[in-house]
Amino acid sequence: MEAHSHTTPPAGGPALGSLPVEPLLTAEFDVDPGAVYERLRGTYGPVAPVGLLGVPVWLVLGYTEVTEVLRNETLWRRDIRYWRARAEGRLPRDWPLLAGYEVRQTMFMDDEEHLGSRRTHHSALSPFQDARSPEGWELRVAVARYADELVGMLAAESGAVGFADLGAQYTRPLLLMVTTKLFGCPVELGDELVMDLWRMLDGGPDSGPATARALGAFTRLAAHRRARPGDDLTSYMLLADPRLSDEQLGRELFMNAVYLNDITGNMVLNTLLEVLRGNATVRRSLSAGQLGETVNRAALANPPVANMCFRFAARDVRLGEVWVRAGDAVSPSAAAAHRDLLALGSSHLVGSAVSTRAHLGWGAGPHQCPSAARELGGLIVTTAVGRVLDHFVRAELTLPPDQLPWRSGPVVRGLRLLPVRYELGAGVTAAPRRTTPSLNSATSATTATSATEHEPRGLLAILRKLMFVGR
Ligand code: HEM
View 1 (cartoon, rainbow, N blue to C red):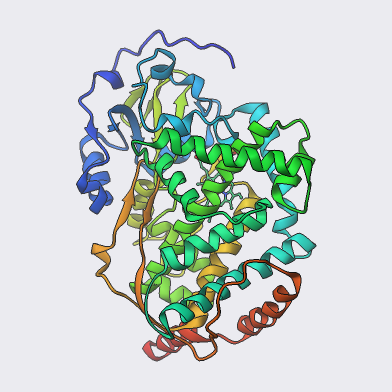
View 2: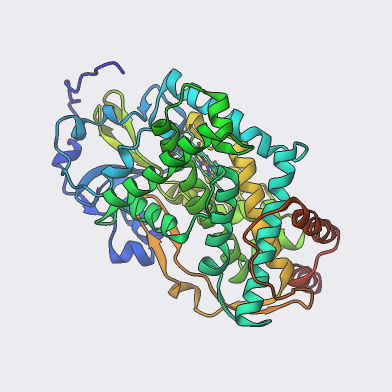
């Protein structure tokens, strides 16, 4: 990385450090982040100074400005060595978000190094993305089977009619099962991993030890798969780039685990929530059989990565109505930018019949979610949501939507719980979970999968009927 100068501040506009910033992570933000974004926008325009656990950063709120930051990598750098406050030793040593930013992996690389690392991810993920390859097929079957097993477990534990938390009893274990399989973990990953990832992302007081624990686990996994390669992502990353050290591969797996568990989980739960609380456009797209479009609409209403990780200005630059100085940190907010899109929705951009693909749920520009990862994430989300809609004939929220408990951190806004009262369809068999995946059991689940593709059952069938009656 070239050293860069932090001199020659522009004449106009105050420096970030000299502004009285309001803390972002308040009780109000927890309950209603949209109101906070709108107030900041009303005061400062599309780019606002905020305090993140005591450190001032620019929060980018406008759709135009967010896409500019995401797309222009020459001006907006990812390498945290560009961060002036860090370079000058002005960050508190125990600043809880630093642990995550110090994990040097693809997201925090620029230029050739970044491109090379992205290629490694892409090439290692590709076999799983393609349904025609053995790995891709097996993974698809496994995701559906794990989902069915978890619903079967629910039936065994709580009965065909009862109460469930679709976070703790369905989404989180499902994604841990998928991660265990995809990464080739010799032992099943447990919920304590997800809690450590939450601590790191949300900047809890113990984010340092939590990050170290998770990194340690993935570094050991890297060493294990180097010694015993298999048909898994870890081994394929080593095949794609044999020069990867165990430590670097551990860091890359750690970041993938964040996306695969927390971010994918948010997308599953947010989509289920939008369906359950009766968002009319979401239900309409669902009734038309477009689960992918339902996911897009949910991502627009509630993006799984609310505020993306920092970019650093390569030089002094005007953004919105402020001057961002070289080395300042900016966080592009997909959640705030989507409010621009939703406001435009009343005209032509996001009408009920128009594609919602302009959402930033997958990011944008050179660091956007790699296409193979996107396909994989999309597949997992649609399968996870589809199996719930398939197996449940009734599911209602047991809390009013405005009382649901959210984790509103600097990066994600995700549901802690999704409590529902449910009734399962007659076809669900109560079953304890199988812990050893086998190709034979995968094959029997295949029959159920293809049957549902043709003939909607459960909640999905009911939703379709409702929409038909409503016309
Ligand atoms: C539904 C699930 C997912 C969503 C919503 C999602 C979203 C995102 C977003 C918003 C970014 C860009 C972040 C930024 O620019 O700051 C990103 C990057 C990334 N995602 Fe995904 N992701 C998902 C699933 C996955 C999965 C399953 C994997 C891998 C197993 C993955 C791997 C990555 C990687 C490697 C990057 C970094 C790319 C780079 O910096 O060049 N993602 N993802």
